[in-house]
Length: 157
Image (cartoon, rainbow, N blue to C red; front, side, top):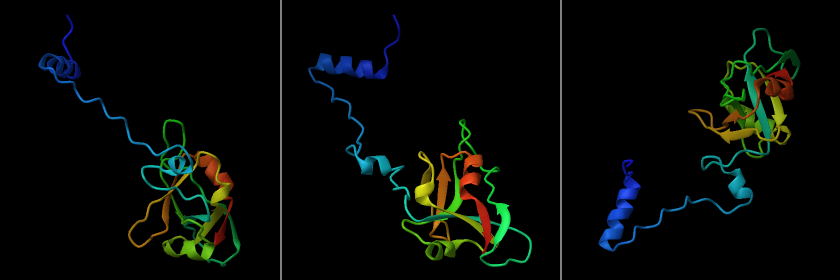
């Protein structure tokens, strides 16, 4: 006879004592709809505004001019499906360039920018503030090659 597992033992003891065990609790989930779909670990993803990726480049910056380079995501950590798990970007809900670029550290002399609405389906953009940068976000669930492509060319700060 196979050994009894703990839930089975508890059920048998409860039945012999005349007590019925409490039914297992179902996990609490929000009702289906946009809010349930939007929550990721209790944080609402950013879906509007600009997304900025900083780029450190040597040279003499010419603010507003194209650098001729792209923002490379090839060194980001990826999951077993080849999708990024935590790429560092700047974002804020409904943010503009002026309101979002502020927390980008001085070593980043250039940037690439995209509208959050242009991110491909399945991409996750989660607020992840760090000390001194309330606009820091985490971009995930996108392949590095795809992210490099849709962020496009870099511009000097």
